Image 1 (cartoon, rainbow, N blue to C red):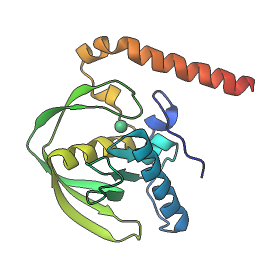
Image 2: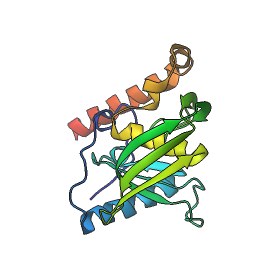
Image 3: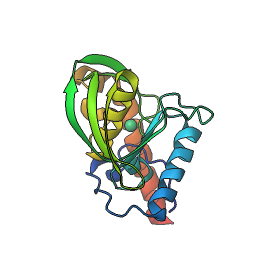
Image 4: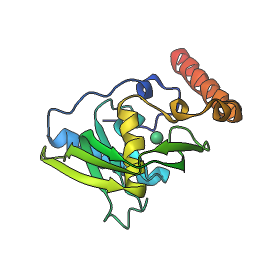
Length: 178
Ligand code: CO
């Protein structure tokens, strides 16, 4: 599969991703490519819709380093079964370059998910891994940083958001012309 980072307002980012039902080599190859793109782009997490693949797969590594893979997690068909606490922290997103906003989220979550072999897991995540997980899980539901912005954030980031919208429109126009 040819994967490429998708930027806001690409429509693939704004629809709900389909559950994974086949745990095959194609799935595992797609996941390997997602890790490659995440590290190349300097991210700590990546959801499949961000590379144009509308399935419930996300990867994360709080270190953001391909040389420190101890925190790597491949999360398929995630469900948040419990959450607790609340904290506001600054978040960025590879699909919104250079835009950072404070987002309030639960501090901890109990996550149920499947791995790339289809095995079920359940584990409690807190702090930074929990935040990354919740941000990437949002992507699988079509929920983006722009949807988490306050009205003040939207005014503050209007120019940057408009530039992304213009860029996407120009890319679509040249793709149609070519
Ligand atoms: Co994101």
